[in-house]
Length: 403
Image (cartoon, rainbow, N blue to C red; front, side, top):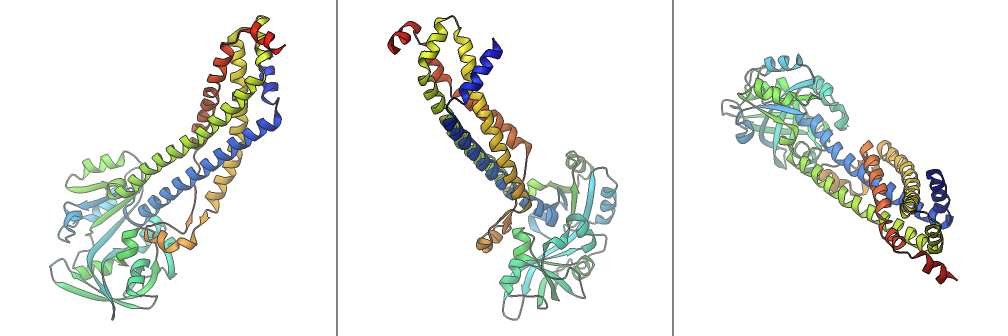
């Protein structure tokens, strides 16, 4: 009996091929657009998080206690070199870098701006986050008194490669010190803080400028894939301030939560469209076959068997829509992942908020799995009202009325 019901459901699903095809196209287009939007938004947030980790905090950063509150050089990590070596030996640690930062004033002959100087080791930064990828203009090479300037700070001070800038700040002893720097390169990390205020200089020069020892640093940044490392480091270094990426970047965490909400709303709207589409087709299909169902009931077929047939018809349509939408959506996501969408026309606005002008998408299996269950659920729910109409049928009256 089940084979017969399955065969009938298959044939009735395509009894009106134009109508069924139109519904499948509607499901496929809606689904593929939803997948594209999800992939693009998630890719945008993931890209921001990736750039922030590579250019600044890593997955975990370590500071001296109170340093992040008052930014005082007195609150520095005295044995940073030793800790770096210890971390490099730990399981799950991919890369560790030391940095020295100080707030101050960057000035040219005509303009000045609050800024920070950041001492970095280029070789370590390249291993840590491929620092050369951030190059916008110039060469990634610290010459004598050379500095890399964040792109927005360069715009503010009207700097270009070869320009000179004076940076002034308090050193570790509290004395005001200044140094003349020559712009070797302009970099764009899409990290708002770094792009708008940072001068990158060789760490040894910055340590000497600020009166620090080579083993001292203000930040230790760590790249890792271990989820347990954060808790391990908090216990291992209780006198230091160990922070996770989301503790340092709450805005990105908030954006991820907002994207989940936005994607959920988009998902609900698209699935509502699918529900209405399948409901309309199935309801009209049931009305067209009222006499057929009446005859089936009168010759002894049970209501649950007819119900199974209707459910199978809806599932066939939903399944074809899902497969079609999945194929289109997969190609769309692959395109967005490999080529992205170019928003160069809005470059200034996007860069000021930390976004790239070309936004790339991402692909997750969950996009397809959740969409599958949603479409199947919408397909099954859409036939509840048509089934109630069949359940109330009086076979004799239906057959007589048809005559």
